[in-house]
Length: 112
Image (cartoon, rainbow, N blue to C red; front, side, top):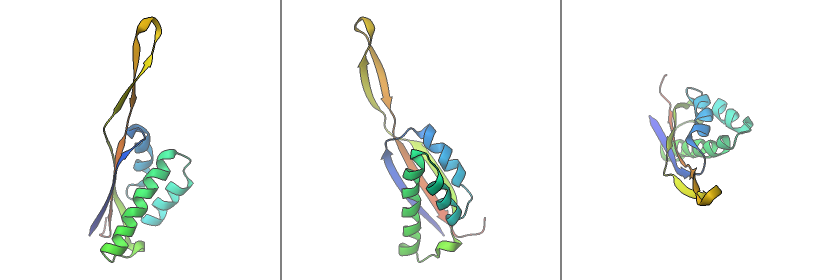
């Protein structure tokens, strides 16, 4: 059985968050929690919240055992981009893109 948790509109660039998400794929839940707890990156804390939500969904909604779960997918997609402008020389403006991310974590208890 697969269990999904989604977090949307997180204020971090998807490129930065994908570094942490790649480390989680294929690991069991205990190892994945260890990775996000010990990683110094901002994305690790944000993805860790989504991972814990997926674990809670599996335990409470589907009565699955935490020890039998592994991370089947850890995806980071691009969310909406906030566009801001900063004044530049000679009356021009430079665009600043404030990127957001959408996290999707899929846990499974089936054999890999």
